[in-house]
Amino acid sequence: MHLLIRGLVGATAVLTLGAAAAAASHRASDAAHTPADSLRVPILVYHSVMPHHPGQTSEQRVLDVSDSAFTAQMHYLVDNGYHVVSFAALVDALEGRDTLPKHAVVLTFDDGWVNQYHHAFPILRRFGMTATFFVFTTPIGKDGKLMTWDQLRELQAAGMTIGSHTRTHPVLPDYHAALHNEIVMSRADIAHHLGRAPDFFAYPFGAWDSASAAWARTAGYRAARAYRGGAWNSASDLYHLRAIPVTDNMEKFERAVSGERTRVMAHQTSTRR
Ligand SMILES: [Zn+2]
Image (cartoon, rainbow, N blue to C red; front, side, top):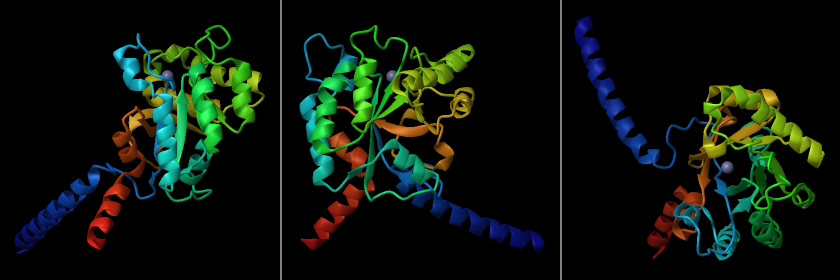
């Protein structure tokens, strides 16, 4: 009898799990394994912003966003009711200290390329948007392709956030001996030159492991950003926040920022007709 009941309960449980799994798989495309306290706030990642030009490698052609595409993307955010919020605002929300406006988006720029200063910065100012620039510190002032400390001070004074992206841009999990130098000392470099220690860190190539995440926390950063992974994050992701690399592709951009919202709006539009 006991065995029979166990068997029946077991069968019921299997059926229930099957239904739940099927329902979950529908949601999985947008919210793969997300805890209940997760927020869908896309952290967009840009590299170079400049007109496309001959001599770009195929990788650059994909990673670099042209001025006109970047302007169109910022227009899209404004026209469709998105709110660009600071990296700090997202971290505050993940920690439960504050709430975000609906349809919040975070803008980040990696590597400190000088084209970000010449091309993205004026567009951001025109739209009144804030962004976070993750820079690696050793070549600053020596490599003409990167922003100078003066230019970074200007960004900071204009309301932009400067974050650390290490000193020399290594694959951190491959260089455990360098973690202190790359993660702690790059923070000191920025504090020395900009007058305030950065609160945020981004892993070069998005490559992190438990040791590098632990160093990011110990160094005093409030949060650290990885690279890919999508738009959902929770408090447990603070030292490996998922993000979304941006390209010129406008359709992909719209999907990245809107997620489920596009499908819901499309449905509402079709039922109204
Ligand atoms: Zn980088």
